[in-house]
Length: 246
Image (cartoon, rainbow, N blue to C red; front, side, top):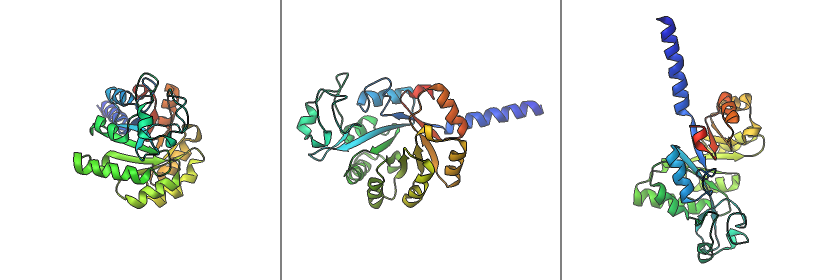
């Protein structure tokens, strides 16, 4: 009986740990559909993620487009920097797979509160517009601010967002030593430090946890790496193939 109780306890802990592990669909489910498109986001939701990650850039006419690259060349039939485009020009672009570049509002409408959204601020002057849009959708559609996590490698843009909004979760992205992001996370009252998985080990994860922050690491696609970072104790991962970690 004692052994049975112990075995059930271990099983419960394993299940509980797994249920608390956050799998974030990177740019939707970009391993299966063109990144940052409605189709990619729908695929991630279909696969069962609890959160999707998208990127936003502000174009010349002021709209926030859900797009990762500074230039449109890699993924569209156009050329040049997307921040130099007007909305009419963006509408004329075709993405790989025949998709269109969505606005942030189109993504929020498509998600319709089904999962949480990590909005990464990719360009300058994105913070104020993101704050404005998510507040409008809170009032108009009832999408709570708790549905979002805002992150960026551009810490000045995170400063700008936090100055406007103290309610929404913020995460500090870093491609350098993750421990160097802790002071900025403390300054921003952030919830997490989001490092490159190649820059972490169990001790680094522990130090970030000890400082009071979660660790969501990117971009972990291979099953062996998924197992490895779980063993390090991370709280979640960004993944192009979310079903591999679910």
